[in-house]
Length: 72
Image (cartoon, rainbow, N blue to C red):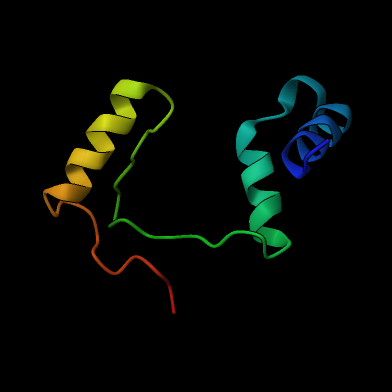
């Protein structure tokens, strides 16, 4: 089983109905498997559907997101 599903299953077991997919993301960041990127103040980019992913990619293409998102 891959790491994602292990984290997912552990999160559900620990938190039950309060579990959120964001908890998996937080775990990846905490253990150093992922880093946070800033896309601009108060910018929310939802990529949960094909349509929203397309919109996010259009925003990136059009320069509407922070071109240097990595935090120092």
